[in-house]
Length: 549
Image (cartoon, rainbow, N blue to C red; front, side, top):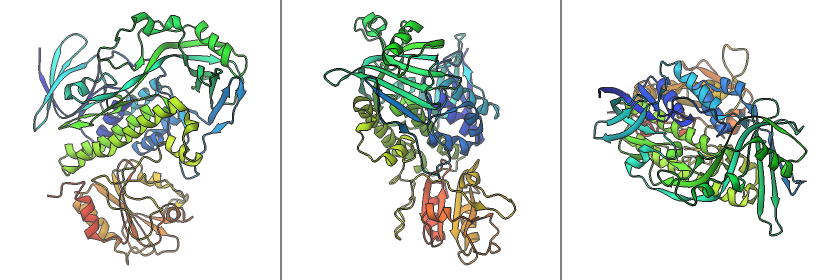
């Protein structure tokens, strides 16, 4: 029997990407449903690496503590070629970056996000599959089928496809998904190793033949648990799914990506590779799971059509080099969710939702291109200097300059500071009027939406309160404001919360000397940098985000 339910947003797919979108929407009091065709969470450590930028997002959302408690640090990588150790790679970041690299099995990431989502009274509807949808000017009508075969019709204002590489949403929209597949197949296994390699370091061991081509490979990423790793390696001929299918197209849509349903590797398969390539003698044991997987690289031609959007693997797939995939998808979802929240409230300017494709598709294209290049040539082939390379791998250099909803770069000589469209960097030493300890900027931003940061020496003389009142009125109360004062300035000339830049870190990192207004978006990016700040320029920026009429 078909009945119709109504919600603001329907999300198809309850992996890390869909869960991020749902959690952020519910955190903003937007009604949504999230469905997944699987009856239960998969127990596989597929995506493992957690980038510093993802931890910053989880900080802003208020769930980073649970992730930090469950994860293990990723301190670097040990590399071996033909048994000879190469230069060690240490994953070092500037001191103002609040989080380092981490490793967390995907099933744990999903558990943490699922538990956070449940705080808002929303749970994954398991065993429920989106099979079709239609959209019109006012919304989307979707047809769901539950595990019992019952059908349900859902009417939503928006639909978000986070349903993976074989996305029903992407195919129904008619989006292209151009790219190709790598010829090699790999084994994955979650096992324990009894070696005594340094804690927190991954291992990449390879063998190069006489022609210099890599013909054997072992990659180990540390997991929570003593001596536990997610290992990947080239598949032996007897486990090749290509051989089993004799070249037939095994996937239902021609996209060969992810875990395969063929024979799973056993411990002897894993041990044989360790015997050949491990940097020291070791025995694998306590296997939790194993699989064969393939890698493709594909990219959609657009991230949205009308009221329907795609994110994560539904929009882009690529090699796992550098642990970019899941983290990129989480950023897709977070970028989209705060915009959908404003649209669902009727508070968004029409340009806001179109900015999702404008901002995120170039990021997806860059990640696909870079990971394909690194998979073929190695990360060491990247000509970027090591410090910049590390920031890029941490996804801290993702930026939206030129986006239709961010302001122009600062015209007054502060071009070396963060500009509109750039990530708002963290800093320390912000001393409040009451607390006896200094705060970090991310403490100030946590669990908030848009924030207007007003920097200067004299709040009264720089009209901080007038600017804050204008922002509040133009956004219907959705922009919060606070003052960041250069140390020594008077704090009694404003009604705003005041933080002193006691160590000068804010002024140094943001390259702020004269009075400046920074609009920080809900996703932690700068929407505007105004120097000197005026109500007119502030209003012009906010008009591109909020519906003012």
